[in-house]
Image 1 (spheres, rainbow, N blue to C red):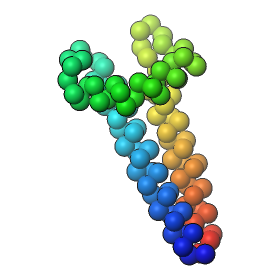
Image 2 (cartoon, rainbow, N blue to C red; image 1 turned 180 degrees about the vertical axis):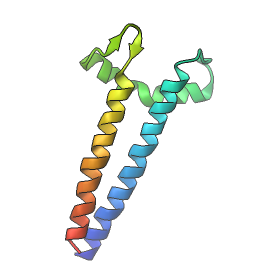
Image 3 (cartoon, rainbow, N blue to C red; image 1 turned 90 degrees about the horizontal axis):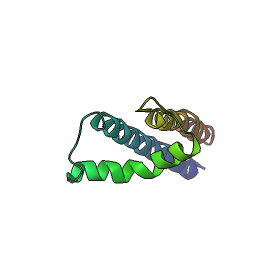
Length: 99
């Protein structure tokens, strides 16, 4: 059982790392949107291609733009935080119980 326990602990750690990295990508994308970035910059293109599919779905599902302010990054960050607390925490707890 220790192999499954270690696998779940590693899965929780990797998932937590990926969720944290994506959260920072969304934060950077939101900060860059406050200035007028060059749309042909490779960094700006990467940030847009990495975040637009998810942000577009949130904007389509919930129109959360009030007076020109887009709140969809806040909703996505809250969802990521929920996944970090619930899913990663559950995987860690399950891995500890299997030891």
